[in-house]
Image (tube, rainbow over all chains, first blue to last red; front, side, top):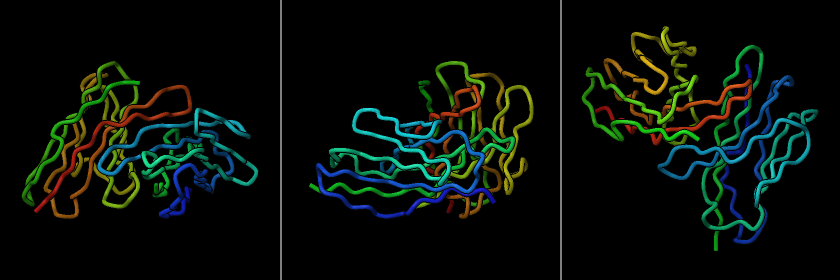
Length: 112
Length: 115
């Protein structure tokens, strides 16, 4: 069964620190990787997508992909209390399906 | 990204009844999906809503329980039929970009409570 695994947390970091969120996936043929942020009581919103090995930066967010290790991460620099949310990893596992599989999400708490 | 609205935003229903949830998009989109998210859980895909043809259901979901309509490229409905308390959940519609890598944008969700 194709799976996307995330530590449910909560991950607690102080304001201004780097938050590191991790995600592993089971299908070596996966091609597309996404990070969504979901505030409590709200719907998920797409914050990053990454398709190639290496780093992709967007503002305070950096997505890192290592296909050999089947690992994708999201770094949040200078974390703010407003970053407190659940972060969902989604992976397009291929195999004929183009719809990403979502992980269970990691809860991030940024405390002042 | 597309602007997506859902109606109703929340409802409390009695067991055995049905509820139809509407999803409206402000632009034409090819791909529309329906998800369920139970408290503290991740997203579970119910089905892909196909314009002009029957929806494609995921394992564990059937048309009799979750009939879906997709009359055009901007609108879809999901009906939760013969509800039980286990159907209490948040139901989300989403639209996807095309081209092999599906980036999804979600509606605000419908919070359903079945008593």
